[in-house]
Structure formats: structure tokens, C-alpha cells
Length: 109
Length: 113
Image 1: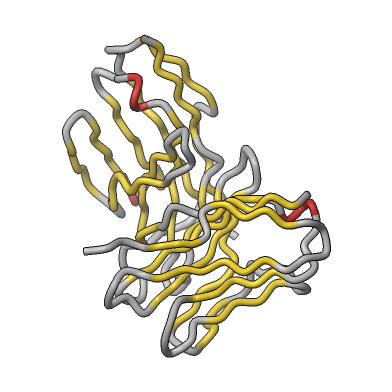
Image 2: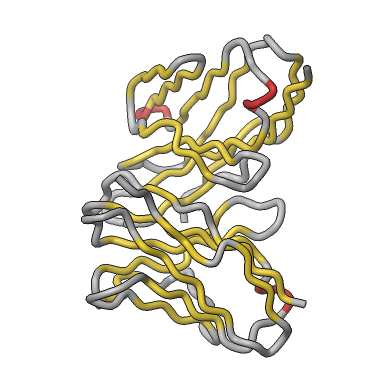
């Protein structure tokens, strides 16, 4: 199956700092989504981004499908950004997501 | 516009009991997916269903696990004779169509004592 690798696995930031999370995938994909799992376990859909760039407030994401990677940018981080960030990809003709193992972010006040 | 609903949110079972997890998709969505998240891991696909049909169950354990999505009512994930290794968070997602955005529910956290 497809490999989805996220880096870094763990990240500690001081409040106000910026960060970049990376997701590499081993095959062409039809769909890519970024999720935030908050400390209560809830999965929040951040971006649907199979290609191109999107922005939503302090968060933005870029997917370069031809080079098989996606980046999630967090600017001016806040303690509420803490949690685990997952990248998930969906292959053509396969109606299921393959998740990476996540980046665990801890933003300290 | 309600999102994906899952109940119960927390479920405790003793070894050997049955666990039934329910998922109501977004209104109008006819595609349902179940994923399992073991502690400290990412989510793993289990099964994909459309109304009354199992489309892909390649991620389901061969024994004790079953899923259904009847014509009326929620999708059910059923685990018979639970064991400690079944302790996990089970997430349901739904989509409007094939390869559309999947919307995830809040999950059911199953603890097997």
C-alpha cells in the first residue's frame, strides 16, 4: 500500500513561533486532507488540498502533487494549536484514507 | 446542519462481551467509513459501506468484527467477544459521493477491561 510519512514526529514551540509540518507520500493521490486531533481526541478537518495552496487564518497548506508532498504552515502559534496533526491521502479508485503517524505539537505559553 | 454523530462516546466492556458502535452520517450522505485508532498511532481504515452494501472491508479483522449500514438507521460496527487489544478509538466518517471529502465524527472510545 501507499506510504505516508510525516515529519517531525514531535515538535515543541513557544507561543508565537511559526512552524512547518511535512507529509510525504509514495504514490499519486486523488485526495489529501490535513486534520488536527485536539487533546480531547476530536478530529478537526483543516484542509482538503489534493494540489495547490490554501489559507485559513493562521494556517495554510501547500500540496505539490507531482513531487508527492504537502506542507502545513502554522504561523503565530497559540496554545490551542497543541495536539496531533495528521495528513491523510486517498488513492484514485480507492475509497479510503491512508493516514500518516502524525506530528505531535506542543505549544508552550 | 448536523455533522457525523457517533454514540456512545465512551464504552467500557469486559473481555468476552459484545460492543456495538453507532454512526449517523451527515444528512444526505450515503457513504460511510470506519477507522480505528490504537493508542499513540494514526487512524487505520477498517471498512467502507454504502446503504445496504459493504464495498471494501479489507481493513476489518477476519473474526469477531462486522459492520452494516441498513436502509434505515445508523451504521453499526459490531465487535463480538471483545479482547483487551480491541481497546481503541473508533471513528466514523461520511461522504456525499465517491472520493468526496470525508467528514469525521467525534469517535467512540472503547475500553476493554
